[in-house]
Length: 238
Image (cartoon, rainbow, N blue to C red):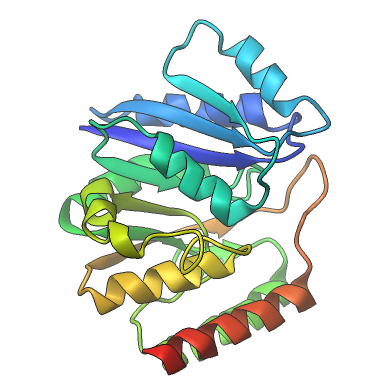
């Protein structure tokens, strides 16, 4: 089995080397071969250059720099397209250490009987360092669950493992326009589509840590407005 880990980056020089090192250490606990695809949106802090230099001898770590196109969702799609043909599974995670690399082996075990495994903050063992945000986010995700009718607890996690063969099966619908656009709202669209196609979901506990280096690129109010608009839009269209 071979897994591609996709890491969208923008100004993460303080995290990227340590994160990739931790991912490699945890994947090596499994029997999976791997490749790590870093998709950098032309960071001003030389994230890509630092990563390339540190892992220059490891051909399994691939760094791509996008100078024209920017954005989380399109970076993920770019990484999927750049993954090798012999890849069985794809893992997507944030690069600020909010997603724990130690969960990678658990995801790879669960994916054997699933089409998509999600790292959830809202099942036993999961959580968030920011308790107030956790409570608000939990209720909001329950709202999305009821609205969309999908048996998933975390629509905004962004930490997941998916079978590449399943992505290839739905390839005509996987485009930057109707799935991979915006910020975290792409994840809502992807979950809804997989459920529509009778995909099998599994969730594993994930504790969301606050970043220790760099600044967050997210704005809570704008995100909630965008996510709610996305959820109602795909529900109406379905």
